[in-house]
Length: 463
Image 1: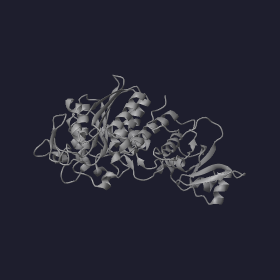
Image 2: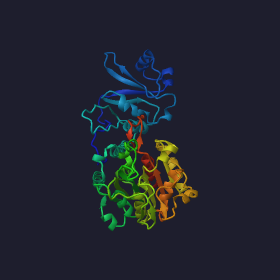
Image 3: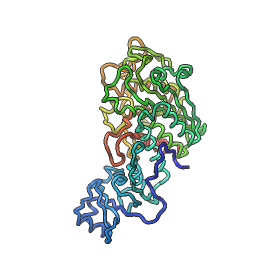
Image 4: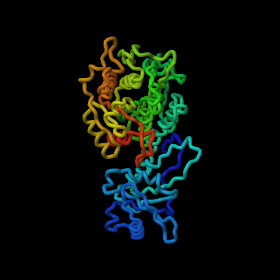
């Protein structure tokens, strides 16, 4: 069975054989020492080609036809392990193979695949793209599985809210569950109050598209129990504490936590890992209407803790509070939540390096190792209890928006920590879910973050 696709697209790979064009991936040392194909070397020297990082030089045949390409890796190829992603956007259409490259087969293939991503759903014209032969010593099935998970996250984030509101996100979640024969359930609208999810209902009640809680079960009882929780704010106006227009431009990505959790779930299910998997996604649109929640309101959460609303634009932690409390009631072996939660995380680490928070030092060490092994960057930040006083408030148990503006990513994590009391191992990821500019393995836009590292960690832990 092929991996799930939210948007059907042709594979960037070709495995049928036949005539293919060669790519010589080289460093400056290869040109200087002459240790490549002599025809390619002669053309490179005549063209003054220096094999700079990401540079491409097409090679003609004696008859003047396209005969291959030289691709520069720069002096230190390890600095950009997925540099081959640039090939997927710079090569002419056709079928290619890597003739020589000082990279592992998995790295160069995965890099090409990641870089091949195009979100052209709304484009009238779609350009033809090159395909690459996957080397025989590469794990083709796992490469395609990881690409499917990454592409699912990117597709969901890139889709504008008029086509990715709560109802459409539920449809995508249902399609994913059906593809892998998982059990799926949903609680919608006022039923959230009946089932004791008051904060999810509070945040989403002003939208014309009703709030909901999505849940998926897959795997076998008795295996390691893993629960994934993802923030699904399909659009965030900021509520009554309305954002300025410039801050709303990317708010279709505020369901990036949900999108990444779904991409990770895809990888786990497609690989048939020996886990008992549960996925929980609270889905809302933070809108403005006569019944919108207000600054100063106080609400009781599923866990019983009361929360004072000091900023309606700090809504993500509210819906996660109910979802995490619900997940925690089952006390899984590992709980992972992912959310586009704070601007403070971006100020601290920028858009490309998502922080994670956990009290489990062994898990933190394992995730750091997985990050390095997969070249999927992560960075641990502290759950510093000295700041816990900042989320307390006079009239309720806790506030959703501490005053002062300092350590915002940490206080948000400490807020969530209040709702996880039974689970032995919990980790919170504060992701950006967006690539502001083009990179070798990404054309920019919606982005998968941390899920390849998480997949690698989970896969290693259940072998």
